[in-house]
Length: 275
Image (cartoon, rainbow, N blue to C red; front, side, top):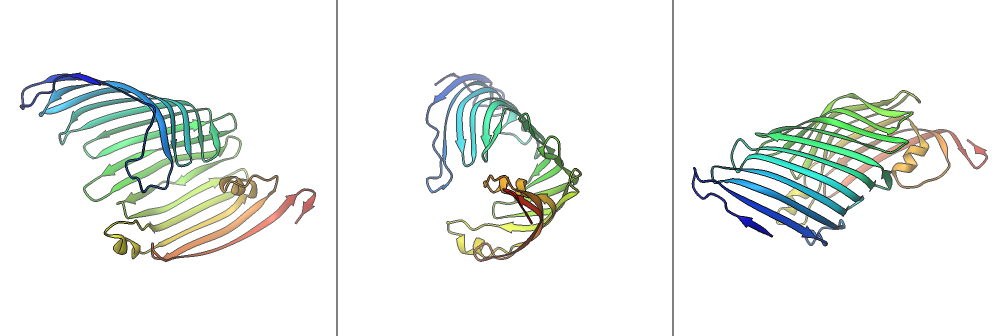
């Protein structure tokens, strides 16, 4: 629902107040394989006209499910200035107090994004009593791609976190993703993760043949990764301990990928057995 006015000349201004209340969020793309549902109540005000709009909005997300992310309660605040102009500015903040991400319970989280004239900054802090996730960096967007510069990353157990030691950038254009060399270290076990390269994906549309021919060239190496953490990532919870060294190489094309991988597990312990 809404009521008010919006200016239709360069100098005219108006104010439009609106409210949105929905108990059923549906995906715009019916072909999407990822589940999407939720319940949202929002209200806000648009002020201005053709010369530029200002937006203030507040959304109460009562529930939200997308892929492996389930949010039970969240509050999102959006402020926009000079919308529909080349000087557009957006500030977004979101806070939640209950969520499950890829099977991991998150007690609290806060995300902030500022964006102005094709460039912005982002920050995310989330976690529970045992685990923490912190990301931060900058982003840039032009007519062809979006580039995300990751400057800070700290993830995993609060007692033995993985920390980004080599900031990197990721460039995405809707067809492929190119990542600079990145590196994380876990000092508690002498662990390290490093990778770089190009990933691409093929979609079902008129350009599917062209996207299927996009080349792949991505590599990832792992040293002294606790085996229990690896099992947790792939969703296989077992009381197994040990350290994993390994490497993955992905080549070929988006339509016909070639994956080569090897791994070595040392000091493996499970149910009284020790290898």
